[in-house]
Image (cartoon, rainbow, N blue to C red; front, side):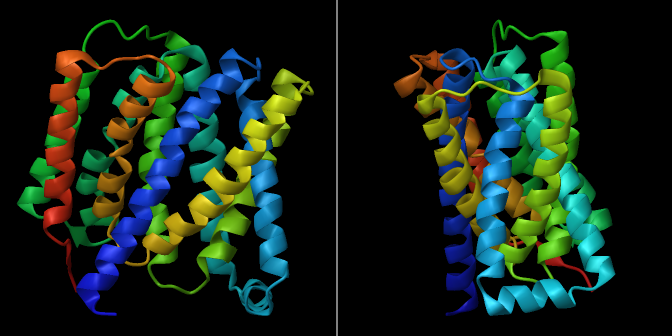
Amino acid sequence: MSTERSHLAHAGIALFVTLLWSSSWVLIRWGFDRESLQPLTFAALRYGIASLVMIGWTFSNRTYRQQLASMNRSLLARIVVLGVVFYAVTQGAIFVALDNQPAATTSLLLALTPLLVAVLAGRSLRESASGRQVWGTILVVLGAWLYFTGGLGATVVGIVAAIVALGANVAGSLLGRHVNRPADASPVVVTAVSMTVGSIILAVIGAASEGLPTVSARAWLIILWLAVVNTAAAFTLWNLSLRELSAVESAGINNTMLIQIAVLAWIFLGEAPGIAGLAGIALVSIGVLLTQAVRVRMST
């Protein structure tokens, strides 16, 4: 496969993953509103079950077992930190934010991720973004702001949790690129180890702060779908895409979730975007297109 085709294929994989993740926001809201699930316990169940799937996959494959057994301490330490940042902190904070305020407010803050990644990637990853990519991320942020103008129903707990999620999401994007770019370990192994670490932390904190949950049959269906499809499979594919996409590109694709969530919320939650919302969607679309239009230059 040519370099350009390979790059396009990895971008398509990343976009498909964002579609799965966007549907998660609707399912999570159903879990809170219809099943009365607690945020950290909900997150722990989702990522705990997903990590069991990934562990089973890892140990059933000889190549993955060998990679895990021969993994050097430096790489293992980075994967563990990735699990703490990207799963325990980011996902836990997102669940708390969604439970305490409308999804629009959390999405608005998380829309700053690609812009912050663009600024920081040049220092930590030695990837300098082009002018078009910088303008693209700016348009994404402006579009997100326009879409979510009006009363957002923010709460102190929700805003603090969303800010924590934003910081951890930026750090996770950069760290994920650090871990996956050298291709020293399979995305399956990276996902299995990091997700296990994060889910254990979520489970401990959730049990200590929220107690043991009572889960209905319908809630289990939601949790299992989120765990197996939207988590285990999705995060593995995401780690695969990071082998080709730069941090700015992956963050830009990730931000299309603003559009996807808006459409899904319109269809399944009855939240119509209105004229300002449609204009915001247009700006986000243009911004993401600019982000993807020019490849990030790798400095030597």
